[in-house]
Image (tube, rainbow, N blue to C red; front, side):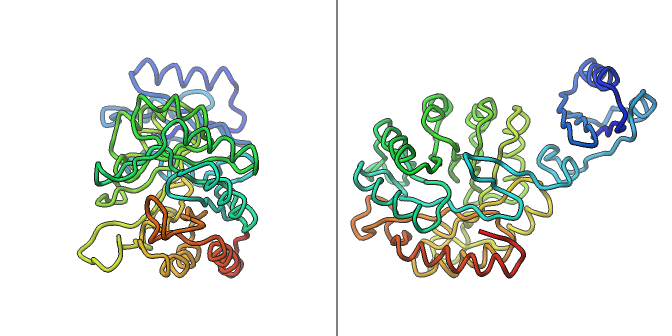
Length: 337
């Protein structure tokens, strides 16, 4: 349930309402806008009588939120959320570009790619220091050394860092180096991890699980939001279907669906959703046209020798081409780059 306070509501009246919610055993989530204060009542609302709040001083009205993902829903926040990372605003009218290698392989490799993607138009640098791989025998990342290299690349280029965190006990460590904590597809329903990043108040990029529904993605986001962290971005990265030609099947439907159901920014991942670099740019164009707030793309200067995901990585010049084409699509649908 949402309690909408009058524009003239006093601090005392707002505190009285929140105290009553707390007394009844519900969580309180306060959203103070320029014109209205909205109070979210989180919990099992079935036994709750809305009338008790509607008669309280300063209350304008109450609104029931029907979806189970209360804080992630458009009903909770009708306007789209905008998340600021460094000088980049994610959401709103401008597109964000997160680009870089799947894995940090060496200092020289990352710095070369970082400079290249920045010149091409990237606004954030992505790179994996800890890598969840299907096979235990493949490259698992450089760990802390990779984080240190990412931090050096940020210092050199000014690009904020997006990198994955895989376990609750690694959140504090990764947060020391990262600007955005990425939750990978395999960890979308790792609830202890979601709760841990919910305590950080850091921007989080939550990737959709490869066999997860849209509602399951939003419910995972709800874990982070319920922890008090409202800096959440959703990522559509393709789902597993019967089709085997591509690595995954790009669910273009999910982008406008998520924008309709939720106020959270939506990022498209054309690299993982296709698994083949010749398909990345066309699918990136489609994601922008469908309403994505940004793209996260794998870029490598030498894909043939990449230690992970070389087949889906764009070379820097192709990434520059993608940005150019995305800009034209964005302009056609009322967005900017």
